[in-house]
Length: 492
Ligand code: ADP
Ligand code: MG
Ligand code: ZN
Image (cartoon, rainbow, N blue to C red):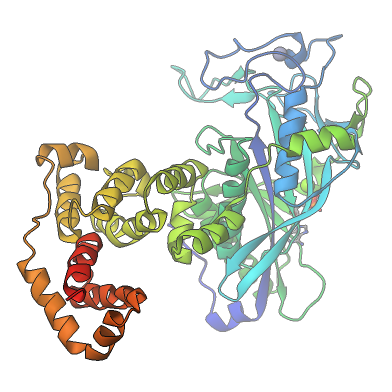
């Protein structure tokens, strides 16, 4: 839990937070960005290495085409302008996990710029600008744990050295920790849809550095920022920002100044700690990488790459609302992952009535999941199961009531619909029509004018009568059966 510094509400209200996020995303290539070593996570330390990614003298980098294609896809999905020519640059610094003494990155000519995504905030939809998206290589990893004398020992694993990353830098457009959380959620969702990364935060495939400052409301100039590094969950980023904003306001209110520095978040304490001051630490002496040609993504190659750009989450949500009549909320749940949305749409399209599949997901599945505290991915009933059940209702084989009971059984037994339907002995709704006939007689008696018109030849009125009977039966009657019986009775 974040222990937010104790600042009065009035003091807080005088300041406006300014936040910009730098997100590193590992690309899902099979091999590294400048050599053919594997990118596999979890292999024994220092087994995915070669002279290039070990930084041995004389080894030459060769750019991985797939990494460029993935970066271009991500850039397009984030609405960036993709430059035809971009330049790799050396970012020089010393660190034990960086054997070359520099990281190959992009600096003044990045792959892509001027992008942005939309997020939902309390005040409506807001655009968060993306300053740039560039390609770079990852560094190795220092291991401080797992040794008998771990306090003394640090080991280096260079398997990660040279793994391809994109860095996505946002504009300082984010105004609260909640907005930061929402931005990251949407960003991750979009990247996942493009398929260029698994965005697995535990494995470090998505990492975020959060820059934050505060300024008195109404002031144009930004305040001095601090950067919180290496926070490993979106929730912790929100907490770290909450803490940091409170700390900034506290310092300023007591007449102090914020020093520009990098800080670390301790999630157990809910506090940030100063790590290094930025002024002294950061002069990277960037210069163009002499061992690599400028990266050229010409129009033809770009068009080829962009053919693999899938429909993105927001567009898909809007289409699903229009096509299946689901609510905005449910469209959000159904598009939470591309796989789930694909499953739903495949099932819906294969079913006799796609809208009924959507209705069952909304009306019967979501509530049961919520009651059990399950995510939709954990549902005992698969999308195909929902579709199978929808077809049975559609054909009149089972009633709505029977479906509800079968769904209850599915959740009780943790089994999918087709299995439970078999176990229950493929039940069928009774064709006992006496109750239904009674309802039909009542409906006919209550509408003598329509009956007269029907018998005078206006047979399209059958639709009206079916509607009335369905309404009287509260949607429980089997429409096909209603139709049959009505035709008989209306005929006189
Ligand atoms: P640096 O050179 O220190 O890395 P950049 O200008 O590259 O700074 O910005 C890094 C990130 O910090 C960007 O996401 C940017 O939006 C954000 N940022 C810049 N200035 C501020 C500020 N005063 N307050 C909050 N965020 C900021
Ligand atoms: Mg920066
Ligand atoms: Zn290598």
